[in-house]
Amino acid sequence: MAVTLYKLILNPFLLALSLLTRLPVRVSEADSSDWGRSAAYFPFCGYILAFLAAMPFMLICCFSDVFSFFTSNPFAALAVILIGDFLFVAGLAWMTGILHIDGFCDSCDAFSSMSATKEDRLKIMKDPHPGAAAVAYLILLIIGKLILLFLVIFSVEKHVSFLLYNKYQDNYVEHLMLFKVCLAIVPLAFLSATTVIARFAMVLLAAISKYPRESGTGAVIVGKVPVLSIFIAALWLLPFVLLIPWRNLILALILAGMVMLYWKFRADRLLGGVTGDILGACCETAELAVALGIILPEFIKIG
Image (tube, rainbow, N blue to C red; front, side, top):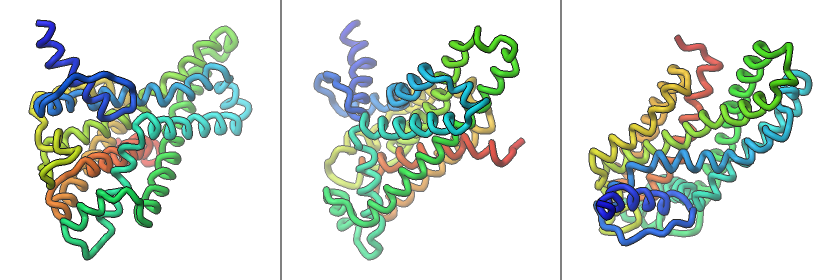
C-alpha cells in the first residue's frame, strides 16, 4: 500500500518539483507514466513558488507600516510595493533556475527566423547563445511583469488598506498587527494566481500536443499527460474561485487560454510540435496574461 501511494502520489509530486524548481528533492527512478502523472502537480508547484518568492515582500509588510504609508506617505507605499514586486519576479526566476525564461528566449530566437525550416528552428532552440530577438523580447517580458505585478499588488494593497481603515479607523493602533498581516498575505492570493494558472496552461499545452523530436527534455511530458492528471491539475485552481473576484478570474483564465493556444498553433506550424522550450515560453507569457487579466477590470469596468 505504501509503495503504491509513493508511486502514484509522492513520486510524481517530487518529479514535478525537480522539473519546475531548483528545490533540492530526491527522486527515485521514473518511467514515462510517472512523468505524465507529475503534470497533476504543476499548479501546486506554482503555489510553492509564489509563496517562497513573495516571502521578502511579506516580511517587508510585517516590519513596515504600509497602512500608514497609504494614508499619509503614498510614495513610501509605492517604494515598498516596487521593492516587493522586483524581489518577487527575481525570486521566481531564481527558484525556477531560469528554466522557463531560457525556453522563452530559445522560442523567440527560433520563431524570429522567417526563412528557416522546421529542422533549422529546432537547431536554433538547441543553441545556448541568445540572439537579438531573445534579448529584446526578454526585456519586454521582464518590464511587462514588473509593471503588471506592481499594479496587481498596488491595487490589492490599496483596497485592503481602505477597507481596514473604514472598519477600524477609531482604534487603528490596537489592530496594527492585523493590518500588517492582511497587507502581507492578501496579495499572495493574486500573485499565486499568476504562477498557478500559468502552470495549468503548461499542463493543457503538454496534454494536447505532440513532441517534434525523437528525444529531448520535453519528450517525457508532451503528449503523455493522462486525463486524470488534467482533472487533478484543474482542482488546484478552485481556491481562486473564493479568493479572486469572478470577472478578474474569468478574464485571467481566458487570456491564459489564448496564450496557450497561440503557442500550440504557432509551434505546430513552425516546429511540427511542442518542445520543452515552448512549454517554458507558454508559462512565462501566461503569467503575464494572468496578471493582465487580474488588473484590467480595475481600469475597465466589466459587469
